[in-house]
Image 1 (cartoon, rainbow, N blue to C red):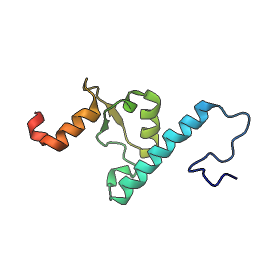
Image 2: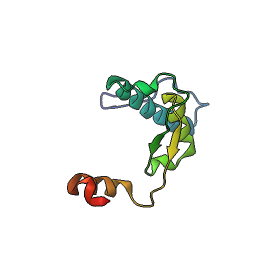
Image 3: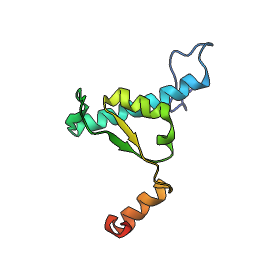
Image 4: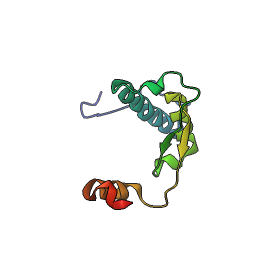
Length: 103
């Protein structure tokens, strides 16, 4: 037991690979997103077969595996748009300069 550990994986065996831990981290992020959306009262997370897709952008969204995990956890269709620029920089510019200024 290490008193300095800030996070960890429980139940790992010799059969688990790094890919299993990466997938668990991605799933954790998706479930946290779902919890946040439900806490904020987003109704579309409740069994929606004809909902508009959730549009995601950015580097992580390029992963088809992560998009599928999001779709499964949120029970929503997911659409990825490659806007061709660094989304962190774009988001910062939108906050600093106002969204209307970017159009």
